[in-house]
Length: 498
Image (cartoon, rainbow, N blue to C red):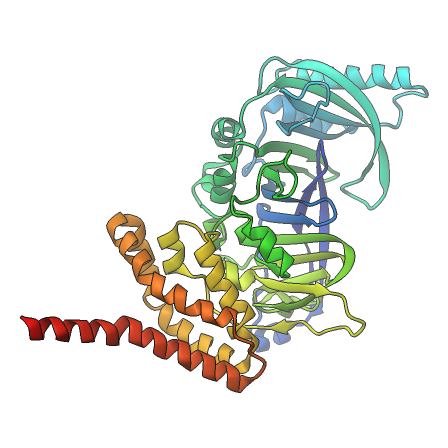
């Protein structure tokens, strides 16, 4: 008999000042060897490094948060300077965090912060004594030097905090020091090579996306070290809080397309980091590590919502090995004022934005079963031509596909066949577009008639399979006429005149 108890999914959500880490405990019930072998199930390996993307959509506060992180319990993956690593020998230290997050020290917004949390127990009975004893502990750490220069004591705050090891809430004394502030891209370029192993940095995956996000002027850089009973959790996160509605925050995208998609209930996580496809770290390429790469989406709303459909597999439970053999969405909460979904890669090494997409809508009394809508990847040729998957033209093509064509059985069947044909050649054309600007402009001109003809579907009232077939055939014939018949007629006339 085999027992599988895996603590592998470490998902991070940051508060205003510190990284709050919690674990999703996944227990695989005992299964015999013959069951695993007969069903062809793979047994997960153990690897301490994890990568994650978290997208938080807060509709009530009209802002979104993007976070890309690397986490590990091994110093071979992420290692701090020795004097910081030494905090593991002090049972009073709850966490060590270095961040340039805006407002980490409210009175000194032009400074970055070092935040050290100390267990409140045994520090004294009054606030003066607690602060004195806290500083005695934390000053010893910062006196050794803290990666960045110009360190100054700022404040001590008493606050509750959820324990990493248990569900219990503990009281901590939080000491805040300020240091010289540097832009996130500067910190990432300087500190990532110092802290993160070369194996992780050269393996691509989410690390490359974190590096790209660090180039955003308003992004934040945060590294943390969190001791627990058996080891220390080490994290590096790049995050961005953005909004297309609040003027004080940077825009999530210039055209506001993300908000338009969300308003329609279409959730495309990769739109937030402006990529069409995402790959796992190559470190995981030769092993079965289904939970070491996680894409998490959190949606908060003032009204009750519900997940209506997804474009990939749905993992209903996490009870045995069979549940994680295939990639798909696991929804810890698929209805209510909070939607919490985690995409697990299974044995897959990559995923497209369209496979990650899912649809939400107003909650209904009947529990609507999540509908799986299979489709292909992204609009590769159009994305390369117009420069971004958030370009209006690319968004228009997606909307037509998702909201019109895929809403009928005939449309879904057509897309299944079309995708097999389209993705046999589109990656090569998209690559050539990126290499050849003249070809890219030619493709733009070529796509213009197609985009114009598809606008007809926006005004069509399609309520049945027959209407979908009628309008679809009409649009196809119109494009045949524009792309083949009209040029052929023109060539024949020119030849006659010659």
